[in-house]
Length: 174
Image (tube, rainbow, N blue to C red; front, side, top):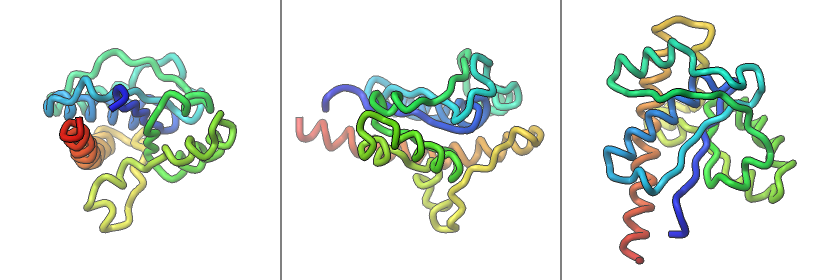
C-alpha cells in the first residue's frame, strides 16, 4: 500500500460524536495491530466549538468504558481537507449533505464526494434497520452519550473489520 489510510470523522461541532469515533476506532486498530496503517482525526461541519476540548460528557462516556481519550482540539472541516483524506466518515445524513456541498469546492470534487461515507453503514444491524444516522447527544444527558458510544462502537467494529480485510489483502499481494 502507498502509506497509511487517512480517515476523518465528521459531526456538527467536533466535540461529541466525531472525537468519540476517533478514540474508539484508534483503540480498535491498536488492539488489532493496525495502528501504523491508519491516520485518524476528526472535525466538525461548523466552527461553533473550534479550539475547544471534547465535551466532558463524551469524555466521561469513553472513560467509563475503559477508553483513554487524549486531549482534543475541535476544528472545522474545510474543502481542502478532502485532498489529505481517503475516507471522510459522517455521523448523520445532515453531515453527508454538508460534506457533499464542501466536496464540490474541493480540488477533485468527484474524488472528494466518493470519499464520504456514513459511520453506521459499517454496522450490519443499523443497515438492517435502515437507521444510519447517529443521533446527536449534545442536548441530552449521560444516557444519550452512552447510547451514542454503543452505536459508535458497533460501527467502528465493522469499520475496523473492513480495514483489516484491506490490510490483509495488501499484505498478501505485497
